[in-house]
Length: 381
Image (cartoon, rainbow, N blue to C red):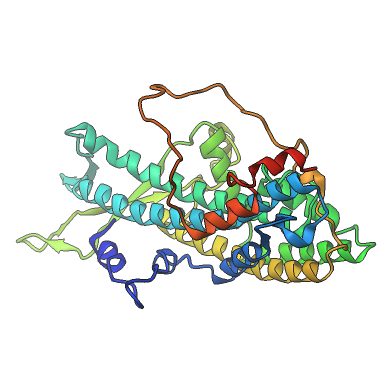
């Protein structure tokens, strides 16, 4: 990070130094208090004794599924903030490494016989070459974390709105499609609540940023994760302030401007077939990342407000939208892989004593996971 960001983030928290601090979200500009209210409401409805999980869901969708879905719902809600913090940190690191890379190329333009010639400096070490990679790394990290926040938000939507789809494998596109289909199904009071949310959700997406911001964010994430990377494009622009030599001539000094692909859903060849259109967004990547961060945060906070209202309505009308078994279709899963690590046994595992946060203790109690209650799982439906 830049020294200025390190200094800012090093400021002590206000309040009692013996109490837990508020965390870094607000200092990073990604505080989402309404989303925190939603997480708090969900956790507050956990029952640490029968019927376990979200108590007012009972008897639906069966005890084991109620526990599994309840805990995953809270985990999704909490992970939204975690992803936002990661995105904000990646953005700060991008800004730092972008400046460092720009400083390395400051003298890349020379004037020879009155003609500007570009002579990029040769990398003197692997560390020099990693400068470009670090810029890419933190661009990718920012967008991937933002998309992760949206996927986790989608898991919360599934749980709060009782959507009939897997909460463990929630993804934003799938949930948005379900909501769009539900907008036309509003025969019962519960379906009307779902349809109203679906309509408001689309309005929140539209109002959170410029046209196409969300589609671009998800397409860029998919390009990073699933596609071949696009060619990096950027520009050298004059650096200010302008310096002059002894004869009053401007000394050419440049700043590197990173720019991101304008249409990341298409291949390299496809975009080059339209030379009249810019291949990149006509703005600095730092502005793009900052805008995406703000738009995503705005969508999450707006969604939280609507979800809190739905959650309260469902709590007051628990039979209107029974929690569906389809959210955890196959019950408790068995071990997924046979992988034991690359040096199994080199570090032991002894859970005889555990120190953890009180929230984790409540989650384990609400899931009947302590020694004195775990046997009850044999009797759960």
